[in-house]
Image 1: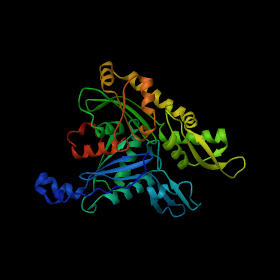
Image 2: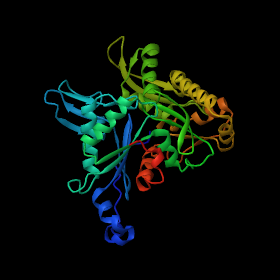
Image 3: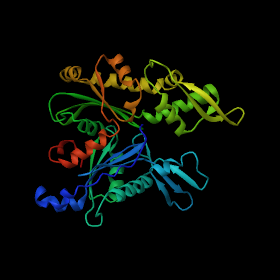
Image 4: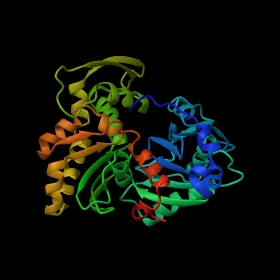
Length: 362
């Protein structure tokens, strides 16, 4: 939920000029530029081996309707949502964490890969892509095919909660249990991880987008005010909360009066927003309870000691950690940078594929 920006990290000259440092594979690694992708419903993050996260952009593509020509991808395309004339459509090709529009996803991935990969004509990149833990075989195939068509040499998939756990630095290969809750734009993933595998998991298609939709619905139903997706997201970020705040806040918003049909301004409070988003927040908490019920008792005692790790954009919803603590009686820790955990996890897998071979789906 932070402002989205593209960060290009420099590649050190030392890595380029010291082939002996990485043995015989250095030239190959230099030419191939393998990448890890957190392909999210809201944002796509790209990790380049040796250069960290180099791209963080909205998963949006703007197309010319008649010709199908791509006009903009990422930030520029998101700026067009809700503002386009009839000849242009701004599309979010991923819905609920999976590909809804195969062709547009492929073109978006191709654009992002071209931006970050050097020497792509010499050696196509190896790509590790995160996917929701609850996706079907057909949906996995769609992700794989879109990445291959966008220019990948080899494609490996990794489940999002596993990537998040690796990104946070949890010992996923140890017998001790770790619980991760990853709340993104399209899905909320709750998983208990031990011995390089997911022991129990719940994946629900209720997350940030559902929260935005409920804010829009609440204002429409109670105040006859119609707002757009971007305004709903702004409300969620600025005054949204899952737990009562010490001092309730207000925000002035603009929309269209559905009765008079004219633009209108009104003030909304954080307590009203909390009421608006109660349903999706309750659904996420119920999913956490279900995951805990499915957890073997030995691992449950590990979670009692270590607590729950909260990652993804949804982790930034104020008071969510307090609410989860209240509902589960477990300690809940928000990751230092919840938005980048999954992307960093895919990158760590790239850098040590042998160590993480058990968690990668070929």
